Amino acid sequence: MKIGLLTIHNALNYGAVFQAYATQEVLSRHGKTEIINYKNSHIEKVYSIFNVKPNSKILRHLVRDLLLLKSKVTKKVKFNCFFDDYFNLSEEYNFNNISSSKYDLYVCGSDQIWNPKVTNGCDIINEDYFLGFIPTGVKKISYASSLGNYRFDIKQEKQVKYLLGTFDYISVREKDGTDYLESILGGRVKQVLDPTLLLSKEEWIGKLNLRQKHDIEEYILVYTVPRSSLLKDVVDFYSKTGIKIIAVDSNLIKIAGVDEQVRDAGPQELLNLILNAKMVLTDSFHGVCFAINFKKDFAAISSGTLSNRMKNILSLVGMEDRFIESLNDIRALEPINDEVYLKSLLLLEEHKKISIDYLKKALSN
Image (cartoon, rainbow, N blue to C red; front, side, top):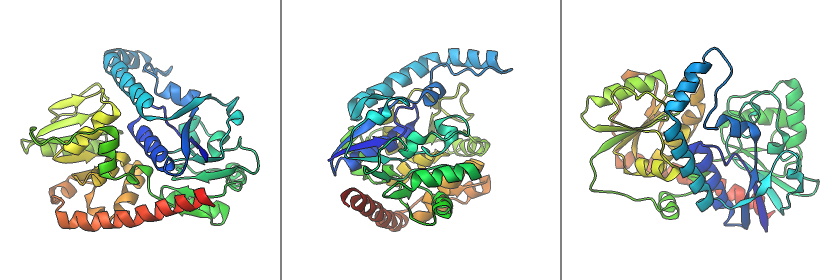
């Protein structure tokens, strides 16, 4: 059986790369799997080395990009090496020729492939990510697809209802997204785990040649995406502990209290830093996923309206207390002990089994 996976795979974004790789690996247990090498001009533009928008701040952004040029180029090279080494890619496709791809079945997901702001940069739905190019009779499966916080207007809801009505199996990553799509479709939507959680800690270490180190200086890792103001306060709080703080952060200016800033980490470098950290401070959904999967002490820092995904996964594994909305929450936070993790990882295994069983059923029927 030949499986075609359509997702966001070639962005210079850690979460996108990790979810694409994990989905590929899980699907490969059931048949020869290729990531459809779909070239999305909007995503390529967003993650280009020079992404200067024509507005009043154009000069400032241009100077910033020039100062970050070396780290951006280095990071891009590392990501491209990861794509070459670990992705099983098809030939290149785009909007005009993707209908010529040939697979026994198609899987789309995960990531925010159903959020037009992400895939198109506007409110126009990209039907390719809804597998709209596939002829009748070919199986369509969604695994852990997401629309983030986006909500469709009435016209779009009709469009989405038609597109998803042609799917054999539909699953979504977030609880609120599941409920929302069920309200449009009248049911038929399953909530499943993010694919990064379907691979065990041991699988991540083995497949990507990660290294657990025991003879290094202790450090707290900061992994930030939106770089919320609260995260800056939390870093300041932990800087007073005397433990070294390393930040994976592509911004030009280092967060106050950070001892070492890594702007150009490749995907494996980031996972190695999480794996060997004493503690992880993150406002990233996938940062939380890997902290849990790698059994690390961590704090999930609120970034406001973008925090639903983090809250959802923490709720699934009974770790709601790790969600930080104020400095008082940090002051009250205790290190995670083995007993807490034993319970949380048992809950994770239950949800993992449900998700894997769903995928097995979808692929075999």
